[in-house]
Amino acid sequence: MSVGLDIRLKRANKVYHEGEVLAGVVVISSKEAVQHQGISLTMEGLVNLQLSSKSVGVFEAFYNSVKPIQLITSNIEVVKPGKVPGGKTEIPFEFPLHAKGNKVLYETYHGVFVNIQYTLRCDMKRSLLAKDLSKTCEFMVHCQPQKGRLQPSPVDFSITPETLQNIRERVSLPKFLIRGHLDATSCVITQPLTGELVVENSEVPIKSIELQLVRVETCGCAEGYARDATEIQNIQIAEGDVCHGLPIPIYMIFPRLFTCPTLETTNFKIEFEVNVVIVLQDDHLITENFPLKLCRV
Image 1 (cartoon, helix red, strand yellow):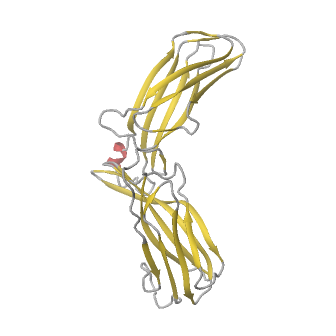
Image 2 (cartoon, helix red, strand yellow):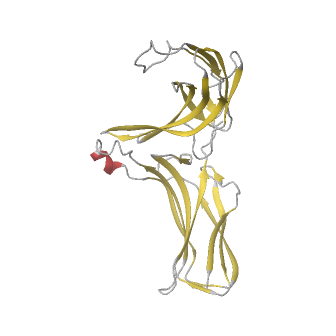
Image 3 (tube, rainbow, N blue to C red):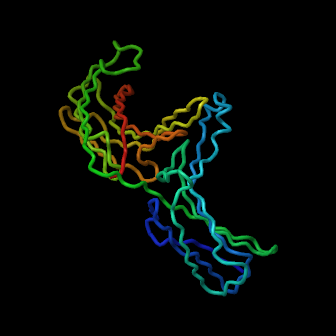
């Protein structure tokens, strides 16, 4: 006899803010009546910190302190032990979203070394012979928008062999001049990153121009900090040897879940950067880096 267990939230987009009520129904579907030992719901919000393999040996003491940080936890018994009739049964539930103690509900974020996740789990305990049923669903938490408008801070850039850092032989570099601007480096997370880039001249033909969004995650404690930068997405904005003097638009949308407002706490930090990458035909890689500050307004 198959029994279906499901959690349906009232909001289709599953996005909530601190102080709101998480409401929905537990759906039990079965052809015949189902005997059970109680149905419970558990809501949990956790920050999981992980060390990159290159930092593990360095921070032995730190390894023990990378325990998950619990932001919110709540458990309710939805139905006492008994019987659920055959057919489809919907049991409504509500959870107020209030953080534990003096903690804050950080925004949902899926990273590599830092994960902030909120889940709702429904468990149906059954007798010895029948298997317990469990269903988990994730919901998103967005932090409260900041008051006031964000003043755009445009950034002009000019890339030449002289402006580059981390170069062994500057003499062997081909001559080039690339100008451009980003409309803002303090960005609203729901709006695209925009700007413009112009190749004024280049001795060597250009192969490709790309925009790379990077997450910089820092985990740590008194022993030290492990800082890791990893790519979130890479968008090609030009292919081949582009016309010189032609403005090329820069446009990138921040992906959901993989980005969140820039966050700094005692145990971890989540920051973002964007790289403008120019690949020359001889496979020289020219990268210009811009730190970003993301926020919600």
